[in-house]
Length: 286
Image (cartoon, rainbow, N blue to C red; front, side):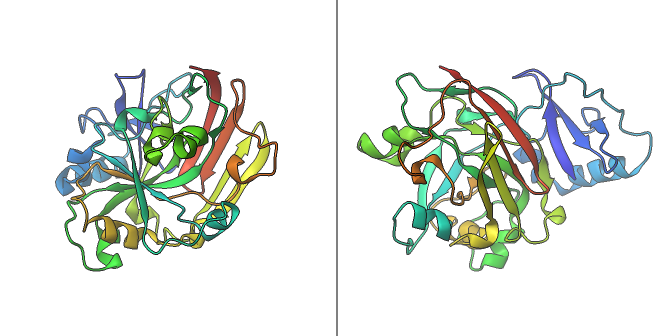
C-alpha cells in the first residue's frame, strides 16, 4: 500500500493512493498514519480490505491539495552517516568499521513539497537523497539482518538536508548541521514493506535546478538496511513510528570541486527513490 497524509500543516488526514493512482480518504477507517497504526495488524488489515473493495474509500480531489509527511507523531529519527561506498570515497573518508550514527529531531520533518529554509548565515547548505525506513514492530537486541527487515513497516523517500559548516567546522557533533528547521522533507508516500521486496535494489536520484546531481543505488550501501536495524537495536530500542535515514550516495555539493555548488535561496531541488515517490522543494531564506 501507498499511505500518505494530506491537508494543511498540522491538520493532515490519512489517505491512500490506490493502484489506479486515485487518492482515497482513509479518515473513516483509521484516525491517522502513525506508529500505533503500523503496530496494529488488525487495523492494517482493515485498510487493506477497504482498499480492495470498490466504493468503500471515497475519492479525494488532489487538485491543490497539500501532501504532508506520510507519518504522524514520529518517535525518533536515527541517521546513518557515510553509508555508501561512493559517498565515502568522494568525502575522502575511510570505510566505517561500524555505522556512524546521528539524530534528527522529529520537528525537522516537513512534507515532500514544502519549502526548505536556508538557515540565516548559511554558506554550505547541502542536499542528500536518502531511503528512509519506518519501524513497525518494537526491536530490541535483534540477532540477524533478516529479523531487522521483519521489523520494518515500510519505506519512504527522505531529503537529509545538511549545513556542512555547522556539521563539520563548528565543533561538537554532526547534529548542529542536521537539525535546522525544515531539514527533513519526507514522503510523499509510506510504501508498505510488502511492496519493496529488495531494499538493496532501489535507485536514488536528485536534481538541483534541473541538473542531475545524484544518481545512485542502495546496492552501494556499506551497511544494508536489515543490518542497520539489527545494529541499532543493540544500542537503543526501536519503536513503531521511529524513522531511520539510511545514508546518501555520491554527488552531494560537499564532494564537488571548488567552487562547491551549495544551495541558495531560490534553488529548486527534486529527488526520488524509485517506487517510493518524488519530492520537489523550493528553497527560501529563513
